[in-house]
Image (cartoon, rainbow, N blue to C red):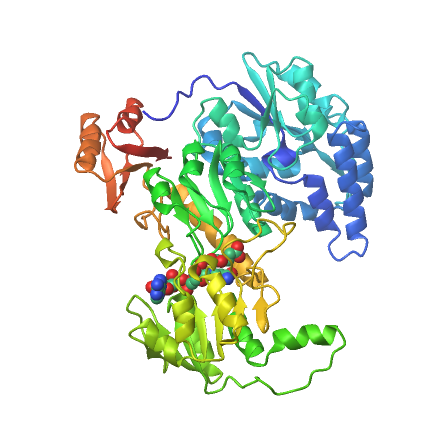
Amino acid sequence: MASPPTATLPYLIIDFDSTFTQVEGLDELADIALTGDPSRERIVGEIRALTDLGMSGSINFSESLRRRLTLLPARREHLPLLVERLKGKVSDSIRRNGDFFRQFPGRVYIVSSGFREFIEPVVADFGITADYVLANTFTYDPEGRITGFDPENVLSRDGGKIEQLRRLDLTGDVYALGDGYTDYQIREAGLANRFYAFTENVAREAVVARADEILPSFDEFLYQNKLPMSLSYPKNRIRVLLLENVEASAEKLFREEGYQVEKIAGGLDEDELVERIQGVSILGIRSKTNVTQRVLDAANRLIAVGAFCIGTNQIDLTGCMKKGVAVFNAPFSNTRSVVELTLAEIIMLARRIPEKNPKMHQGEWDKSANGAFEIRGKKLGIIGYGNIGAQLSVVAEAVGLQVYYYDVAEKLQLGNATKCRTLDELLQQADIVTLHIDGRPENKNFIGAEHFAQMKPGTLFINNARGHVVDVPALADALRSGHLGGAAIDVFPHEPKTNDESFESELRGLPNVLLTPHIGGSTAEAQRNIAHFVPERIMDYVNSGNTQQSVNFPNIQLPEQQAHRLIHIHANVPGVLARINNVLATRHVNILGQYLKTNEHIGYVITDIDKQYEPELIDDLKQVEHTIKFRVLY
Ligand SMILES: NC(=O)C1=CN([C@@H]2O[C@H](COP(=O)(O)OP(=O)(O)OC[C@H]3O[C@@H](n4cnc5c(N)ncnc54)[C@H](O)[C@@H]3O)[C@@H](O)[C@H]2O)C=CC1
Ligand SMILES: O=C(O)CCC(=O)C(=O)O
C-alpha cells in the first residue's frame, strides 16, 4: 500500500475563520448585510480592524466580538448567502485534502469563536458533523435581526477555547491548528501537545512567533505527520526563483498554488546564479540570465526552467535535458509586440526620425525631405520567416510593402510574399532588411561586413532578434560610411543586466540609428500573456507530467491521471523501458496506462498504476540503471 498508516491520528483542533476558510465569517456577513449601503466600506473596514486586533491578541477576544456585533447590521436571511460565499472560500489546501477529513470522522474538531450558524453547513461538506463543531450562536430579535451572541456559550468569553478544550477532556495527542492567538493559547494552557500556526491566508507575527510549526498549507501538516494527502509533495516546499522583473501575475499564479516564491528585479550573472540556485526547483528568467552547465551543476533540486520570453539561446537546453530539467518558454506571447515595433521602426527610419527628434528637443527646426521616403511599394526583406517574420509579412503587406523572405527551413509563403532561395538574393534587392532568426549558436555573426556590402546603398537595417547574430563593428562601419541609410537595433551582444548599469556600444551616436533597450517584447499585453503562459505550462508539468510545449523534452500531452502516476526520466539507451516494466511486474503492479517518448538524449516514460503497491516499488524504480529523475504523483 502506498498510503501511510491511518490509525494514529491525533485529535485535530482546527480553527474556522481564516484557517478552514480563507476569510473571517463576520467580516463577510457585514459585507453581505451592507450591500448597497453607502457606509459599507467604512463599517466592514472597522469590523475587519477589530477582528485583527482580537486575533493578534492586541485586545480581549470578548471585547473584539462585542464591538464587532454592535457594528453588524445583519439579519437571519443573510446567513444562507454567507454560507454560500464561505463554501466558495474554503482554504485551497483544506479543499484539496477534503478526503482526509472524510477518512477520519471523530478525530477533527472545529473549535471556533465564530458562529455555528455558518460553520456547520460549510464543514458538513467535509464529513465533519455538528457534534464536532464547537462555536458561538447568534441571538436575534423578533424581526430576525442579529442582536448579539449567546453569553452562556463558553466560546464567547475570554479564554473560551481553553475552557472548551478542558470540557472536551480529550485523551491522547491533541494538535491545535489556527491563525489566531486564541488558538495558540490552547497549547499554552497545556491542552494541546503542539500548536501549528496556519499561514495560508494570514500570518500574524505574534502567533507565528509562538508556534511549534508554521504551516503555509494543510498539505505541509499532512506531509510532516506522514498522513494521507492529495499531493505527493507540499507545494510550499517547492522553491520558485523569478528573475529579471517577470510580470507580477506570474508570482501570483505560483503563490496561489502554494509555491514558495522569491523574486529578483534584475538578471544574475553566472557566479551569482550558481550561489542562488541551490534548493531552487523552478527557475524563471528572461533573456539576460544564462543557464550554463556550471549553473546546472550547482542546481540540486531544479526540475524546470521557465524562459519568460521567446528566445531560449541563453539556456543550455541539452545540459538541462541531460539533468532531467524541462524548459518551457512563451513561443508566441510577445510575437505581435515585436512585429508592431518593427513596423514602427521601418517608418521612423524611412522618415529619418532618429535624427529629427533630438534636434527638435535641442530647439533646431530642420524641415526637409532629404533622405525621407514612403514605405509603400518598397521591398522588405525578412530574414527568418518564423512566428515573428511571418506575422510581420502579413502586417507589412497591409501597409503596402512588398515582402521578400529567406529562411533555412521550408516555410508557408503568406499572402503575396516572395520566397528568396538564397540570402544573397534577398540582400541584393531589399530596401529594408529585418532580422528575425533565432539565436542558435551557429547564427553568431550571421550578418557581417560582406552582407552589408551586398545591400543596396541606403538600405535600412533592423535587428530585433538577438545581438550576437550581427557583427556590430561591421554594422557600425556600414553606417559610418553612409552605405546603410539607417538602422534600428533592439538587441546587443552585451546588454546591461539591470537598469542601473550603463549601455556601451559603438552604435551610440551614429546617424539615423534608433537604439532601444531590448524592448521588442516589453508591452503590457505581452508580459501579461507570458506571465500566464509559462507558469501554466510549468505547473501542468509539475502536477501531471505534461510536457506539451517544452522546448527540450519529448512533448507528451497526457490524458487525465488515473490513480498514481510514475514519472521517469532516463538516458535514452536501449532497455530502460523493459527494466521499468520488469520492476512493475516483479512487484505485481497493475498498469493502467503507459506513455513513452524519447529524443536523442532522454526517454520520458509516464506510467499510471493502481494506488495499491508496495512502498519498496519506488526505491526499485529509482534504482533502474540510467535513471535521471523519478517522481510519483498522487
Ligand atoms: N527583441 C525582442 O524583445 C524579442 C526578440 N525575439 C527574438 O526574435 C527571434 C525570432 O523569434 P520567432 O519568430 O518567435 O522565432 P521562430 O523560431 O519562430 O523563427 C525563427 C526562424 O528563423 C529561421 N532561421 C534560423 N536561423 C536561420 C538562418 N541562419 N537563416 C535563415 N533563417 C533562419 C528558423 O528556421 C525560423 O523559421 C528570436 O531570436 C527571438 O529570440 C523574440 C521576441 C522578443
Ligand atoms: O523581454 C524580454 O525579456 C526578452 C524578449 C525576447 O527577446 C524574447 O522573447 O526572446
